[in-house]
Length: 387
Image (cartoon, rainbow, N blue to C red; front, side, top):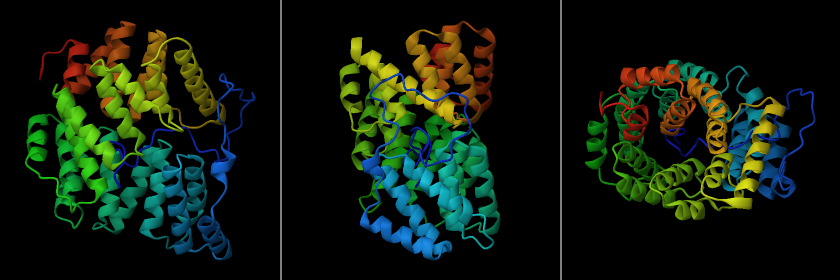
């Protein structure tokens, strides 16, 4: 599955509770008394998982490690329980470093690194896999995802073009190519490419969801909000557990002023940090205060544990609080490694709110240098469309 810009794999959530905590001088105390640090019920292995754990403990060879890690990753998504990502990583960190580790083992390890926002190590790992196995379509899709997140649109386009000739899903290959084109000054060409492709029912649901999501984002960036929202909704129906996709739809609804609809969309069991922060923007009064405390506790926990911080969400939360300087600092840290649509827009908003001409100029230079077209960003920065 694709991740990041291909939102099925990138789940923006707090760091896995099973990972070793970094040393911290102060004990973490949540601001919100209802903050859930761990869910013991969700952490209890089911019968199938216990069988895989026992098999792995008896003989932790490559195949057993892959089977157990895949089971952990599946439960992380289906149960909305991030600690299973940490358990998968703990299995794969050892397995992937053994001599003769399979490409599948190393790909799954790269997936856990992506989850932790460690995109550069994930990219290097995928580079190694593709040097050894250049026809590995799964690794190529994954590397394209990492490159798209980092704003390496030319590198991603090379990977996506090679996917077109491989046996992978045509919908995935076309969406990947369109996304890379859309990031580098060819937005209309990218939209036309996807408009010409029929969504065959024979394609896997995840592939159709990815194509619809890319089509939606490209429309949103071209000021076609209604088309974007319709495609986001159709994609979410195919991938209802994808929090990143849910966040994208919520962003589009909020931008259109449909706060009540966005709030209803974001009211789900065990929401990720990305959803909590967005829902705070849709509410008022005590509920808004509660959501802000919850999000703040989440970010404090990441800092106390030494985990990768969700700087995008930190910037969004600071903007809601009216703290433009804090928002800009977080948005600029985030932009070093993540350059998706939400990252570009939050940096633009923070730079303008902070009244920082240098920050604005740096982002304008990046937009012009890459050709990244987004009507909202251009309006925020006072740029002429395409100029």
